[in-house]
Length: 495
Image (tube, rainbow, N blue to C red; front, side, top):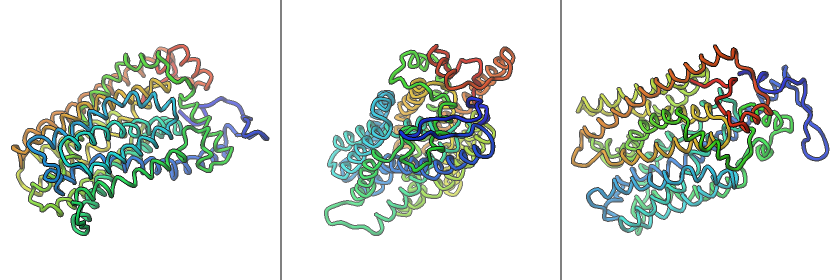
């Protein structure tokens, strides 16, 4: 859908900007194109990188326990048997139960407050892990970290959908979630630096690691409360002109962001009954089982390939570096072609190749190559799925609940991923690799099925109603008020 056809077909729009003057915004032509270009450039270089920075710390604090294991946390907290695996699982228990409540809290207190406060709280939990002395303390810290970290990941796609059109979303979501791959690389580098260069008479390396990565999160959370824009109407926080702000508001409305209700119960039930969400949840389950195991156990897997502790920390960096390139390339092409399903299936196929290499060979180089392929295949699927769900759900509540459902089911099954790499199965980990391979196949199957279902529905609407007609913001609001949402005859799904 073009920028011109997504909004009302007036020559200009006069709107009140402040209290003293009107802003005249062209609706087409070179002048509007220039305003849109400037606006997107500012958002791309200010909003998206800032969200990416937030998620970098989110992923860094979540995954540092894998590096802490090599630095001696099991000995320092007197863990035995499956205690380490269980501590990993408790993070996902907390993350799962807080997904949907956080989406409603965001509508009540604004995204800036939700994201900022939860960042402060999970930063406190992360830093407090340095003081844990036993299994109970570690489990409590991981559980509450999961509760609070659930505020950022699901909120970011909602925030981005306020500022970008549907076909612009995957690339920007990739820039946001791509920071989690940077976190994997930086986490390894930081852990390597701590192990090699930092010593403290009363703090172990794993304790220093939690403190170094936890305290900056707290300060960033405080800043976020005051600087993160909640909607296009508050973009003055990011130094846009009145004309750019008005265009941002119009673009947001043309992207089905017109309802302002705190909680629309009809949208809630519509999200729960939508069969598309069943397919996306199944795909995300297939993703989160191998993803959770990969981030938590990659340092251990690399060590068991024959690398020493400090070198193992460093050798976790290249797989994430490969993943970064794939995340950006795949999601850019997904936006360019306006296709999601085939890119999800293709990425999952790359991960399959990686797991086959890990299962079939005991050679260190082949296994390391397989680990790189796994990262290259898994990480692009995160932004693809979140943007796919945001693209295909109309209405704030329906979109928020759909994304929360996606994350709830995905993170619930992520606990499986924390339990499949048992120490007795080292160093080949046939059970862990086999389970992950099976679920990557699940992703391929259901992403292709969903693509077929959505394409068939688009074709049916084309045959029955003809070419889709762009809706004005008022018509969008009327469709939402009448409970039509993405079932509207003029709506077409991203496939």
